[in-house]
Image 1 (cartoon, helix red, strand yellow):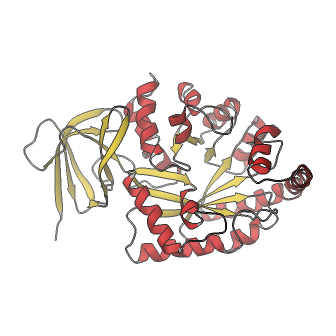
Image 2: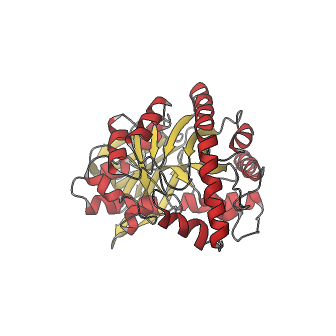
Image 3: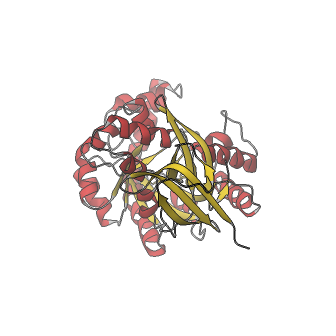
Length: 380
């Protein structure tokens, strides 16, 4: 039985323009986009309609699973709570980050806990408990001794569509100076000077020993199986050259304009955090995402740790950067991330695409999500 829906009097954000008109949905797909007035369908009262947002990098699920140090929440309940906040933020496709590789100081998650979360995601999806569509993004700490053991648990998981190659050892990439590294790994964890120096020496030694072979092994598997590969915190042209050689398609959080520009010119999608846009700068002291936008070398936004920041940043970017129109900003959170990971069926409002849609009211600098549909079914 055919299911039809119609929406009218909407400001529809298309690939290159915003038009006032109506939408027709049939069986979960966009059937028609019509310009001008219409008497048929639900009246959107001039609200914006944008494609469902596509989120490639969010660590938000971890906070629901481990809400306090030493506390582990029911994994399925954690997944559902995370999913509810994702969907009500306008995100209809999400790549949930799961960390691969343990921390030598005993922090973080125990071996096997990421597999528990992945199994909870699979169960919740199979049972129809989820509003958004969830895929898995493996965040691979290549300098960790056990990263390949963790990665092996996901080699045959077809929900894994993205993997990032990370090295958070001090003195390079995200932590080129010791100031921020000291804040992250000494001050916040309450380490003594002696314990911190031991930790720094260990992390640097591990990076030298493991990073190159682990990076190569994970990249080879992803290239052979069609998993999109991302680099992380590239800072130099050498880093970018390494990423190009490994088949990287997504450059996450480059820490210099030089690296961002080289990645963009090489055809990679350059990703930066939406909180960076909303806050006006990086919380770790690296480059401002808005500067990359002004230079024309920002391609994708990620909510990272605040789901609602994805939509908020897109509207803010279009309002504050003269060269970024609303369609261009919305593309950074819809069509470009979808294209980067090979999801050709979503990310834009046009006939034949999935009816993943978000109704948005934009007043006083902060957008309001009023309704969300995934494949034509209202989910928020």
